[in-house]
Amino acid sequence: MTELERKARALLERNTRTATLDGRTFRYSIPAKGSYPFQWFWDSCFHAIVWSHFDRERAADELRALLVWQRPNGMIPHVVFWDRSKVTVKKFWHHAESRGIPWLRAPHTSELVQPPVIAQAVERVGGELVDETLEQLGRFYRYLARERDPDGDALVSVVNQFESGLDYSPIFDDGVQYRNPVALFLAARRGEVVNKLLGFDLPRIFAATDHHVEGVLFNTVYADGLAALARLARGRDEELADWAEAQATRVTEALLERSWDEERGLFFNLTGRGETRTTQRSVVSLLPLLLPDLPREVAERLVEHLLDERTFWTPHPVPSVPRDDAAFLRRSRLRRVRFIWRGPTSQNTNWFLRQGLRRHGYDREADELTARSRALAARGFNEFYDPLDGTPCGAKDFGWSTLAVDSEVSSRQSSQATSEIITNEPSSSMIPPPTR
Ligand code: GLC
Image 1 (cartoon, rainbow, N blue to C red):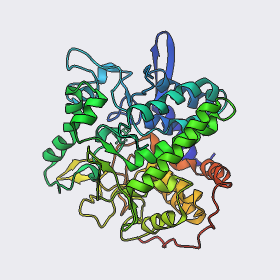
Image 2 (cartoon, rainbow, N blue to C red):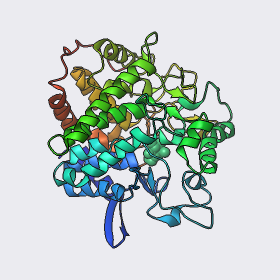
Image 3 (cartoon, rainbow, N blue to C red):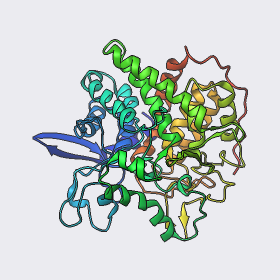
């Protein structure tokens, strides 16, 4: 085990909490002490993937602690407030995103979802967890297909930006150039409050509001998750495997048909009832590289953007907003107030992109991104890093940053998994040398 792996394990261990529910004991890792004291859905999926390197049973427990909260309709909440005493009035948004009532009722869970990376996590953990959870996974992905796609175009919607996993990303700004932190905060949180007033009733939210979004990252992760679900179900539940496989293809096709901007060579979110294609660039625009059946010319154009030093290939890639963009804030601070996802580099989007590069035959570039991700992690497992000088600039001791140690397994698995599908030749060296 390398020093970095040892530290990753120690961090996930330190962030581990235990809780009991109906006489059963559960274990999970919080994202970070202080700022994130609960269990978050996609964070836990990432934690489980890293845990699977060290301790499969512990990895499985991380996911069991999420799955126990699945609703009868299949929904799995994005936050589990295991320690309800920490749902304070000051952090009112925990009440806005749940059925909590300040002072009167602390919620157990939120009413939102997050990017569905759980089938990938279960696949990684493997073993008996697969048989144990397959039915639940099927119900979750079917919930997304059934409840989150009112127009039936295969792309699922988040009902506000905090479901996207990318909280304050400028992709949700609707073209407004925010200078005032209060205005940005209120505009972002407004959708949560409206959803709560509408009783979190999805058909009403879709019919009456425009803050729902068919997101590129969410749908890419969904398509990748469906493909993982199909592999898990094959030989166990053929009907589910066929459904998930067909659905994964439909989602990829819909992304290409509706979110792909041929002229700009990037993918963009579709927003509101009119499904307007947005124009704000972000790391999300590159994410479909993860999908192995993306046409070669599309993958090539995404990689061109990714390796462009003027935009995404900064000294410490990959910034959440390209460096030449008007909305780019290298440390995500708007007048000293921190709004995440507005410039800094995150290890989870790097992890997706590394796999995407590998799946499309860009091994050298994937290796380089892995090396740079590990170099950042060596400066501390932080929530975010300044993409220009690498300074950690988010929450300290942050769980999913440990994904930086996942390189070996992901490269072996992804090349195995995609070797039959991908016919692309590995690229010649396109990668610009590091600039400092
Ligand atoms: C922030 C992130 C979200 C993450 C959560 C906990 O809200 O935007 O993606 O799951 O923090 O780490």
